[in-house]
Image (cartoon, rainbow, N blue to C red):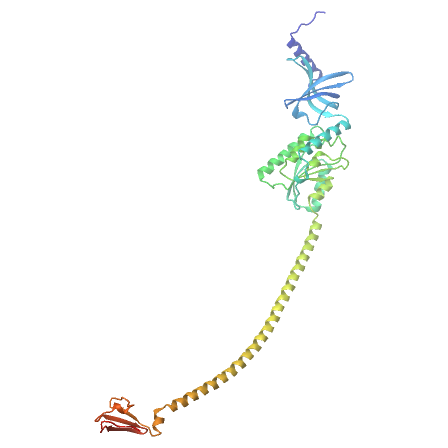
Length: 401
């Protein structure tokens, strides 16, 4: 048989074409144990996958690695085999990797939980509360799921009128994380476009399932999207045995979709009862205020009555005292007037003249008080009680007795 000759590069291309033709574009799945795991330059992941009989080198880009990985873990990888021409090395290019065996998955999950916890994603102090009376929520769920139907039914029973925007997603399988993450990004974009507070809550939910079926809710990128949400988040998965990372990072966790609906909106009957109690409390308080001020007004009027009686009594006493004082003052005044009258009468010249005295005046109305004022020949007027006598001085001197 004549051998077929190739150049090195042609032979590598031939082998790669043959490998591609064998699977006709379908990805190959290989299961084995991880060995030699390492990350290069923060971009590429290299490791070997082996079993008791063989070993294959594997390569993948870091963003596609969605779970913590370490040597010894059992994994299943999906991708395509090929030979790299530059190095002539056979390797398996991984498009997707998943853990095999519940033990390995839980170990990786515990590592991821510890990592996120260290970063503060589960810190209780950062968790927000949901408004008691939401007006609009973003609901991330599968429209075919029982969880979606339960939430809608219970919300309408308890608090009809809430605006619900459904973001339909795949909630199980390989496509679930990317589908949910896309919806979360759409919600954040819409919240930004319409302004903060456009959504009162972001609700992510699905019904129950097995541990493997719920793994989408442990996806690291999904958890980080929930953590970064500008809208308060609630996650409700219909199971109780295991808690997913999505539930741990959410602001509020609902144990089931039904519990989620009940925690999301109040029962209108409870609100009506509270309003009734509030109305009664307000009425009681108002009546108390009215009674209190009625008593104050009554006290004021009672005190005013007492004050008026006191004022009236004091007025009467003052009137009596004033009248008595006035009488005494008038009597005293009359007595003083009488005294002045007697005094004036005692010094009245006419009264003196009535006793035989006279007033001598010169012609120019100058009253003579001494004989030395008179000279012979002077004319004088002698005023008596009943008239005036005119006289002339004869001598040079006169003596009055």
